[in-house]
Image (cartoon, rainbow, N blue to C red; front, side, top):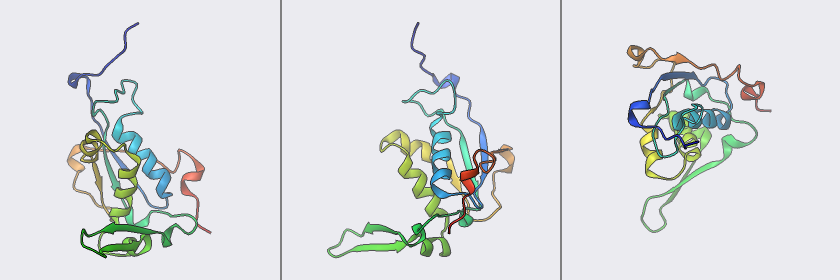
Length: 154
C-alpha cells in the first residue's frame, strides 16, 4: 500500500450554489468549510487546494439560534483605545450582511496560507442573484441534509 497524494492534474473543481435562507449559521459554515477544503472528496490531500467553488446566496436571511444575534464581533484599529465592536444583528441589517457568513466560514478553516487560498473560492451574496450563471453551478440542498440545519430561534 502506498499513500495517495493528489497532484494538480487530479484536481477537479465543481461550482456549487447554496441557498442560506433559514439555515443555521454554524451548520452552514461547517458544510461550506468542508466543501472548500475538499474533505468530501475521496482524493482529499491536506496540503492541496482540491475543494470546490462555493456560491452562497441569501446570506442576509441566515438563521442564528439563541442569543447569538446580540453577540459582538470585536476588532482593533491599531490605535490606543481603538477597540471596536458590532453585534451580528447590526451587521446583518447593515450594508454588508454577507460578512457574517464569510467570517463564520473563515474561522472554521485552519489558520494557514492554504486556507487563505481556499477562501478565494468562496463567493457570498446578500441577495438571491449572483453573476456566476456561466459556470453552471449545482444546487446543494443543505435543508434536506439534516432537519437541525433549519432550526428556528426561540
